[in-house]
Length: 305
Length: 206
Image (cartoon, chains in turn red, cyan):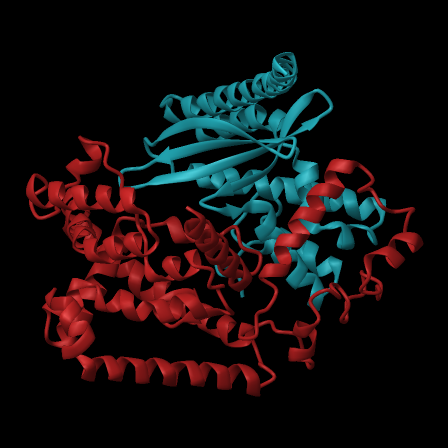
């Protein structure tokens, strides 16, 4: 109750600050995206925005290989029957299916900014987070780091509970509650996860972004956040309630200490997944759209669950 | 009325049965291949090169790599290509997919792969599996379609992320700004792969 109380009445000052900062950040982003023709990092030369507004006319602008095809599919079909090897029904059907899914994620007004931020986050990971994670891995054995991760994860129970309830997932809410009770007691303050290991109680991670998605709020444009990585408009706003339901926010007074704790959590998490980001990254032909799709597709799935 | 109901049940029933048969067949197919791959990953006395060769021969027959290449590029971009370009594209893409798959297997330590169930979706069959790691359960879905008499994989979806869809979106972006030749060049050099060419130098994609 205390944290809810603070959230609603008590702590309005810092809440206002946070909202203000967020609003400022958003406006900065929007400003960036709408004003420059986005120089640098691999965006189309010249007509940056007009190409993005015409998603259907794929392969139109400046491509030598693809002829200037009319946007409609049918007129194209007549002229190019000869070289079409999609006559096989299944291939055509699958092609159509994948093409339909494509349309959902076509709007990407901030791609110029997002690209730059992706490069920034990538360097940050490679030069700071990864070495820090490796350092921690060197000094702490795996079971300790896993215990730490479990401990923090257990503390996020209020966040998961509220979001499960908001999505009317009552059985999952119950399971989460049993998990919390079990892991806090038998699992010694959440350091271990006997709920899963011994009793088969599964975690049901839900955040506000998923809750909004569950009730039909679309993702909005993709936005890469500094330090935090890929996100979108919906999930970005959802960070605010998520932030206030994190015990680090309502138990620790000093903002410096909060930040230190969050950084430590992140480094600890990284230390348990060394090498995975690099491995994933090797699949990318073009890192930004790759990470964007991975994020958006994964979120869409989490919301459906 | 009763006979009618019975007839309906019988007809539907046989329909379901044939589906059930195929589902069981595909499930078994996926399970046996996955078990063989996991077995190889767990065996100690085999060199990595040898192991990878064996893994490729296990998975090759059940993957329709050519179809994956086609639908990843998409009909629109596939059409203008000459026969020669198509062949080159498929060859390169398939090598890349295989290399990527083997690369992922390097992350394998001692996780268990649980093949859960097969689901029929529009004449196709999705096989749900879980990779059980120490702190997580990762869902992987293998999507099969019927090619002649065989069931083959046309897409793999890991945690909701479709391999084909992700490539498709990147290809579309690249082809919007550059030519097919550039795309081929990027397929050869971008990322961190050694099989297509050994030109690779930089880890990050520009």
